[in-house]
Image (cartoon, rainbow, N blue to C red; front, side, top):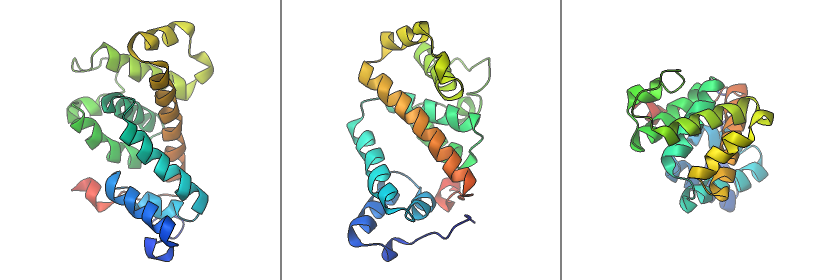
Length: 179
């Protein structure tokens, strides 16, 4: 059980209830998270629609986004986020076994060179962002536009935020995640 009460959407003003339900219904099984975020209307009003807009824009291929999110979530040992994003990564074409091995030095062959670059970048950008070298940035530019690199970096750092938020408040995984 989360450390704070989950707020049902029915307790919110109609505009916030609509954002809550839209996010909970379309983004994935994140109802427990949004029910806690609902304590701060500005966060609900801005974070959830931003995530929905980023997903709809599809500037960054889903596979790379999900690889980065799973890597950061594993680095932070956020079981909530790993459980939620592993299925998204499987849908994006990575086997469940490969997802489980994403942090290993000897990665499965199904991770191609760009996947491995994203894994490397996610680790460095999250753990030691001041050590993103010109060489690593140049490698990213070989495969991604500047807008994609900005979004990848944004999503890596947002993921870390959500990892810490979920763990600090002990947000539990929804039943759908285990179904």
